[in-house]
Amino acid sequence: MGRARLNLCARRPVSLAHARSLWRWSGLGFLLGLLTLAVVACAPLGRPADAAELAGRPVRVVTTTSLIADAVRQVGGERVAVTALMGPGVDPHLYKAREGDVLRLARADLVLYHGLHLEAKMADILAQLDRWVPTRAVGQAIPPEDLRYPEGSGGNPDPHIWFDVRLWQRVVAFIAQVLAERDPAHAALYQARAAAYQRELEALDAYVRAQVQRLPPEQRVLVTAHDAFGYFARAYGFEIRGLQGISTVAEASIADVQELADFIARRRIRAIFVESSVPVRNIEAVQEAVRARGWEVRIGGALYSDALGEPGTPAATYIGMMRTNVDTIVQALAAETTTTGGPP
Image 1 (tube, one colour):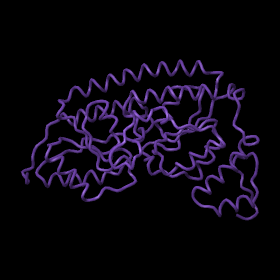
Image 2 (tube, rainbow, N blue to C red):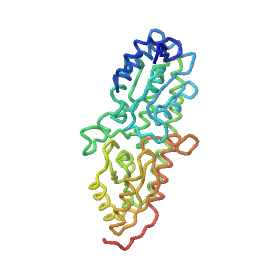
Image 3 (cartoon, rainbow, N blue to C red):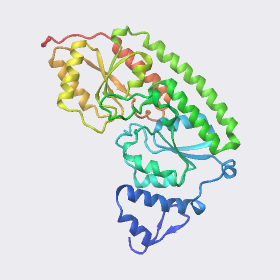
């Protein structure tokens, strides 16, 4: 490192001694220490901007997931400058904070993360971040009695609340409230934009329900790579099976594959689904195991589970993602399939 100085924000240099002490740390300690210096370097006296300053410029909002980022853009419009740490196709269950994230967090006026144990690898740093930067978990918009607590989750709630549009509407309302508190000069704008977006979400919920009605009840069985669609199943009348649990941290075992294959062959499920943020190999293993049991199950397509699609695609927004998912599900489960002549 020589005698150069580490300059985090091109405003105030950090001394060589401080830099060396940081690099001796590892993991969370390193990131929290670097964040401390970044805040001091990036904001006068390390204090967040006040309401008067924010009234004259866009609010810098950093989110963990692309789903939250989209909701903030819908509510904030041109009043917000949004950065998502996790881009399209990124699995938030496995994401670890990187040194490059520290600067983004330190320069934020507001940090919004999901909570409910979704960002498992970032939980500690997010919990402590509010000491420096106003930080909120959007999952707190949902009361505990409305959350799912699947068997085998260790008592942790299912974090995938966005798959019930009506639950996500509560998150949108929460985001509007937080933005209004942070930037009260534009509170009326945030509330008006949120109200308009809520009407779009009401239309989305109606669309999903109408599409699902195209499937007979006995065909509403959704098999996916991991148990991300429990709220979708509860809200829209599906039976759900996931190869992995609500988190992708634990790998599926051979026994898990065989058990799921038995279920699919016995129930004559027509299609199973891969996910955009989860490797496809496990679902392909299930497909082969089902074929060995004499039933041909198709991979019905890729569903967006923990992240939105690439910019410029139909699934780049929350509404587009939900419409794409339900269209994919209904089209695949409505199609015909055949046996392969193997053992029953």
